[in-house]
Image (cartoon, rainbow, N blue to C red; front, side, top):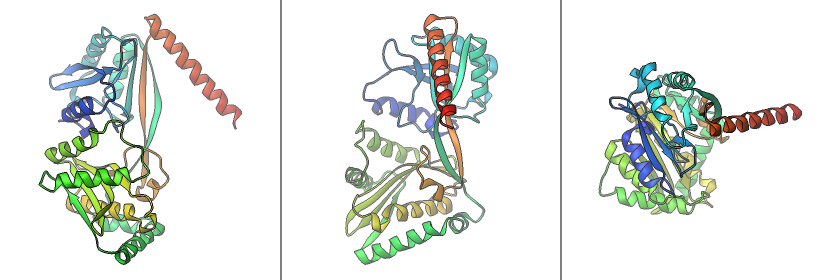
Length: 327
C-alpha cells in the first residue's frame, strides 16, 4: 500500500495521462516486488526527474518503500545510471522526514553521485486534537471565527444558501463537477493548463473513496467550491475557489469550516493538510508548518554530470553571497 495518495499507482497513471501539456517519457524504476520509483524524461537531452509537476503535492516511491533495503536502493540506482538523462536526476516535492530518503541518498553516493537538497515549498498542516472539530475551532484566532460568523449572517441576508459535500460517484456528481468548473472560471485563478485533469481527478477520487467535493450554493448558483482528498486518515485540501465580487460573504471560509467539521467529525481524520504554499491565511487555519524539499543528484563520473554540478555549486554560492550582502 502506498504511504500517500500522491504515491499511489492510480495517481501516477492519472497524472501521466492528463496532467502534462507535453507528454513526457515515463520510466518505472523497480525497487522491490510491488514497489517502484516513477521517473520521467521530459524530452530527449533533459535530466531524469520524478514523475511530478505543479499538480503534485508530494512525491515518493509507488508502493510501500519502508521494507526496501539499502542494497536494493543501490541496485536500483545502478540500474538508473543506464537510463537516458541520468547524469543529472531531480526529484521533488519530497517529505524531508521520509524514511526511504536517506537510503536513496546512500545509494546515490555509493554509485558515484553528488547530491544536494533544496527548498521546494512550505506546507501548513493541522493535527486533529482530542475533541475533534469543537476543540480545533475553539483554538482558532477570534478574527477567523468572527469572519466565518459574519459570512454566515450575510449569506442568510443574501438569500437561500446551502452546502453540498459529495463523497462518492452518483447522478449528482457530474452537476457538482460542472459547478466546480463554473466557480473556478469566475474566480481569480488562472485557467488550468490541462483542462481534463481536474474533472478526471474528481471522478477518480470518487471511485477510490477519497472524494470530498464541497460546493456552496447561493440562490441556486454555485458561489464557492473546494476539492478535498481524504486518504489514510489525512484530509488534503487540494483545490479551492470562489466567485470574484462576493468577498464580503466569506463563502470560501464558510465552506472551509464546513469541510473541516465534516472531515474531522464524520471522517475522523487525524490530520488536515493544506499541501503547498505559504499563503498568509493558512496560518489562521493550521497550527504547524513543515517544508517540502527537492533532491538533485549529479553523476561525478560523466562530463554532463560534473558540469551541471559545477553550475549548481556556483549558483548556490552566488545566492549565499547575495544573502550576506543583503544583511
